[in-house]
Structure formats: C-alpha cells, structure tokens
Length: 119
Image 1 (cartoon, rainbow, N blue to C red):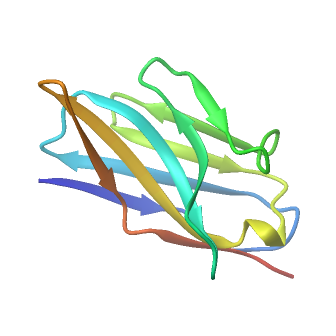
Image 2 (image 1 turned 60 degrees about the vertical axis):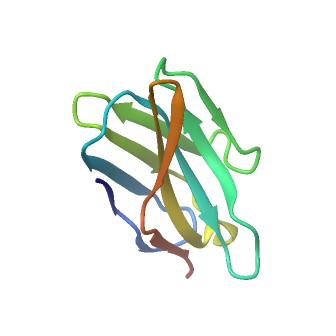
C-alpha cells in the first residue's frame, strides 16, 4: 500500500507564493518520476511540472519561470515552489508518483490540495 500526502495549499493573493509538498509512504520502492498536475473547474487535468529520478525537469509553458519542482529522494518527497501566482493558477493540485518494479510502471496519485489565487 502506497500513500501520498499533500500539504501546502491555500488562499493567496496575486503575486504571492506557496510551496506544495507531497510525501510518499508505505511499500514504495524505486520511485521514478514525480510530478504535479492541476485541474481547474470545468477543465481537464494538466501537467504542471515533472522531475525524473535523475533530476531532469520540465514545466508547462504557463508556469515556466515562476514554478520550481524539486525532490528529496531520502524523504520520498516532491515539492512545488510557486511564485508570482496568478488567478489562473487557481486549481486543485495533485501529486503524482510512479515506481517501476520488475519492469512494470505503477502510478500513484495524491488526494489533491486546493490552491486559490484571489484578492
């Protein structure tokens, strides 16, 4: 059993910052990719940022230069530092972790944390 626990969401004014955390626990081995997705009302879930086991990152164009993804492999934790937040960043943010066991990829999702950017 694998559990992803997210924290750090909340209400922030435009231009402000938030830091999301997602800690993986349980029977989890060989973590591969860690990522953050988001889903705004009436929109599809979209990739925000992704980081591989080797530390390579990629970002959605809408967040480049404002968001930074990082990971602490010793803690099985992924972070998302969000700066210069805009109202259009308002969404539920979901943590995603994948592991590879015997050549099979297993995806895991967090429960989601609400981020609201509003004055």
